[in-house]
Each structure stands twice: as structure tokens, then as C-alpha cells.
Length: 175
Image (cartoon, rainbow, N blue to C red; front, side):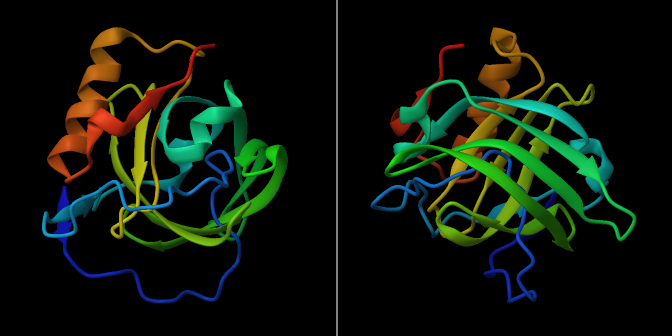
């Protein structure tokens, strides 16, 4: 993992990954900013290709229940993201683009506006992914299956905790 304590600098917004959509950033940060956060330095964005299910999230995002999104590589290195997200008003349709902005990092336009998302971890089989933000406004666990294996879900929770997230505030989504 690559370590970086800085905030992501602007990338001409092009709407990032809809790793599910997203709206509901929590009203307060769910991550301790004094803890160093790391994105995957050697992450290939193509690993996100395919369908993902929201397994767990912080804040309002988990309130909409089971959500899915589909990531499709585009010729310019970005990924088209289509599916469902959760905004304060409820479920929303996602149709956005995730633009790589650094190693293991994307920028997208979500239900709450421009978002800078970091891939914190993906298991070796690309079955579970952990996505977060340095400012702690966003964190989630995605899974290829509606109900991920319990060991992979626990590993994802451990990655969030290692990166300073308050996993006691993480809400699991039931399929």
C-alpha cells in the first residue's frame, strides 16, 4: 500500500466512480484525520470492471438498502459507472464516469457532487473492495456477490479501521 497523508488535489472533475452512488456523505467525518491513509499504489483501474454490490457503508448511504453498480472500462482509461446510489432523498440512478486521478484513486460526480475516492484495498480475487476518502466523509465496502463471505467482510472492516475509520459506525447492508 502506498501511504499518503495529503488531500487529493483537484482533477478536472469528470465524475468519478459511482461505486455506487452515493449521496449520503455522513454529517460528520467517520475517520480520524490524524491516522495516515493509504491507497493502493499499484492498483489497475480495470480491476473495478464488472458488477459490485454495496455490502457496508457509513452514513446515509446504507439507508437505501441493497444497491448495485456496474463499472465498464472506457478507451481513455476511465470507467463508466452505472447503477444505483443513495441520496438524502432516497435511491437515485447513477450514470457517471470514474476518472483515475492517481495510484488507486478516482474522481467522480456522485449524488452529492464531485467526490475523490481512494481504493484502500481489494482482495486478491477482486471479490471485495474498500473505498474511502482522506477527509473521512465517505467509506464503503463493495462486493461482487450480494452477501460477501464473512472473512472477506471482516478483512475489509480491518482495513477501514487501520486507515482510521470508526467501524462502529459502519452499517452492513442486507441483500
